[in-house]
Image 1: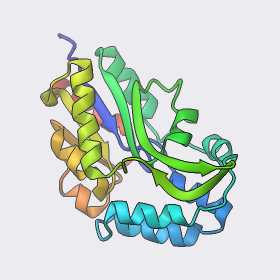
Image 2 (image 1 turned 120 degrees about the vertical axis):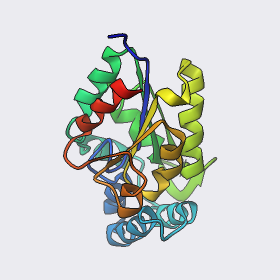
Image 3 (image 1 turned 180 degrees about the vertical axis):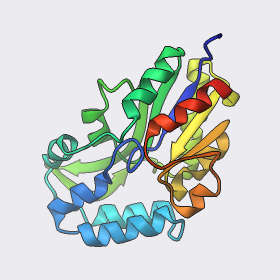
Image 4 (image 1 turned 120 degrees about the horizontal axis):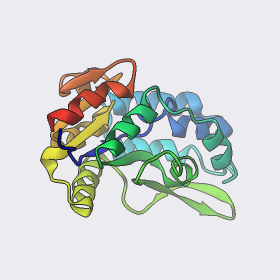
Length: 212
């Protein structure tokens, strides 16, 4: 069998990892309950993602940037992630993670996992404390799709050899841009759009690699 060079792009929070990073940071600010409520609305598609992100990040103002290391050490990769990475690499493929979360955390835990490229939001920090604002472009649904296409071009992998994996409304455009869409423990709006639903393990997506 000829190996197919593929690109698999995953959402981060509740897909690549078990946690919602912003909720872990919100623990330090004492705002987790409010942040979790807004996150749920956004992932169900009932709250504009950019607006919801700004509202959640605003509650983090004043938190020390030392929180990033604590959060990174608490992160758990979801079942099957390592197996999926190994399967993609065995086919000379690439793995990307694109997140509505934060580069400050991804930069700490993704190196060494086999992920080739990643992108997320950047938090504004002044005097070693979070300001409650995001710097630059917000990674919303359109941005996720843009990065899937851009990484495909970067690695010379056409759209028909791509898979997108996500769980929430913010992943839908990325999933539409890929050849196959995988919903991992997805919200109902994502379940309807998925070619495959993985309830237990990210390794369930491996079967699609040989269909590209």
